[in-house]
Length: 231
Image 1 (cartoon, rainbow, N blue to C red):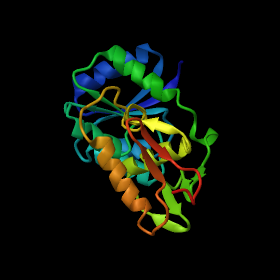
Image 2 (image 1 turned 60 degrees about the vertical axis):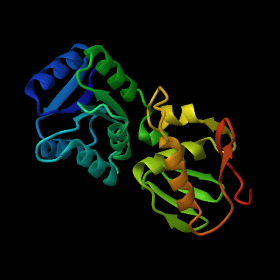
Image 3 (image 1 turned 135 degrees about the vertical axis):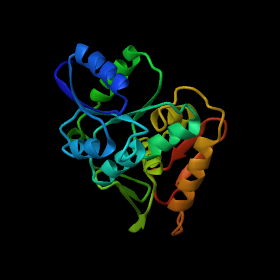
C-alpha cells in the first residue's frame, strides 16, 4: 500500500511530527492541520483515504468536527486519537461518526496498522446505497430510515447498529459481534451498552406501531426478522 492520502488533524506538535513520520515511512501521503476548523475545511474535500483526528482540538473539537462531516455526507473513515480511555468516551466518539479509537500514548506500529485497516475498506461507491428488510428502508447516503413509509430519526450509533442488523437480517448476531462491528470493541466491557442502545432502537422502530422487528434470542443475541409481518 503506498501513496494513499491521509489527513492528520492534531494540535500537539510533537505528536503530529511523530505520527507524520510513522505514516510517511509506511508510504502514506500525509497532510497536517493543526486546528479543528482547518481540519474541517480540508476534510470536506473527500480526497483523503483516512482521517486521523485528535479529540481535543482548538477552534473545533474532534467530535464536533467528525459529526459535522457526517452531517454533510462526508464518509471518509475517521480514527480518533485521545487521552480519554473510558468506555463512555469511546462510545461518544463512535456515536459522532468515528470508525476507530486509539488512546494516547500508543505504539506507532498500532497506529499504522489501524490506518491501513481503515484504508482497506471498500470505497463507498462500491457499496449498496440502500438496504431493505422487515418493512425498513435504509438510505446509506442520506443516513435516513423509514419503516412502512414513516420516517425514523436515529442517532449515528443507532443507525450503525440498525445497518448491521439489517445487513444480517434473518440471522442471529451475538453481543460480541455487535461490540466488534458496531462499537469496534474487541473485549466485553461488562456494561449494558448493547442492551441500552438496542432498547432505544426498538422504541424508535415501534413508534408508529407494527410487529416487533428485533427479536432477542435468549443466551445468544439478536435477530432482525426479514418479514414485515413477523411477530
